[in-house]
Amino acid sequence: MNNAIDYHEHEAHTFKSKYLDKESFRSRLIFWQKIINSFKDLEVSLDLGCGPGWMTKELAKVSDKVVAVDGSKGMIDLAKVTVGLELMDKIDFKKLEINEKFWLSLKDVKFDLILSSSVLEYIDGAEEVLSSAYSSLKPNGHLVFSIPNRDSWFRLLESSAFKLFGIPAYRKLILNSWTKNDCFNILESIGYTIKEVYFQGTVPFYSTMFFWLNENRRCPFIVIMASKN
Image (cartoon, rainbow, N blue to C red):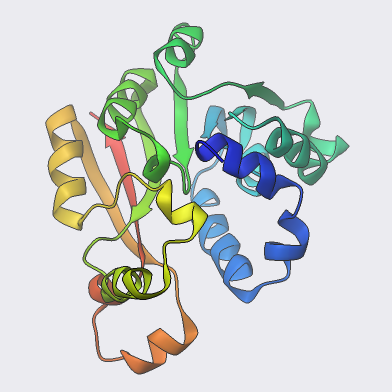
């Protein structure tokens, strides 16, 4: 597999058996549902890297229209099944890579909310994506995204394990992991105002073993909510 799109194209065919019934996936979905449900009566939202469509479905419940983008046809097809016929007329699915051409295709659209879950870590030039997202937001619009937490002890232990046992395919594709301060510095330099910071994700054995660590050092993901001034 040459890139993240190829990897996720392959994952689309095994998503249900590998992820859907796992506790980690269910807890992640509940976490994102709470964030999405904090927004009401949105006109237009963007799911930036929609994957299997679970966030897309939740966005459609609080938005008049959702643009859902992914570079993988397999993931787009899976997302359409996830969303179902009831909400399908609210969603504009686009098979596009997230690059300059993509943003140009949306130059006439401004969004109330842009959501990006487990996407930026795979993108070369993630800072440019955040800058383009800022330009695509309406005034007072919001961005919510996740990024691997480089301060997490789990990430440190993970890196040590990879040195011993080899790096799994998905991990070779991850280009970005940031600290909370990295996120703040990047977002504020673009012009965003930070609204909320969450630390998300649990690894059962690891969480039990290091229960005394604060969230910043324990959880493998940072989730940031920011707004356009």
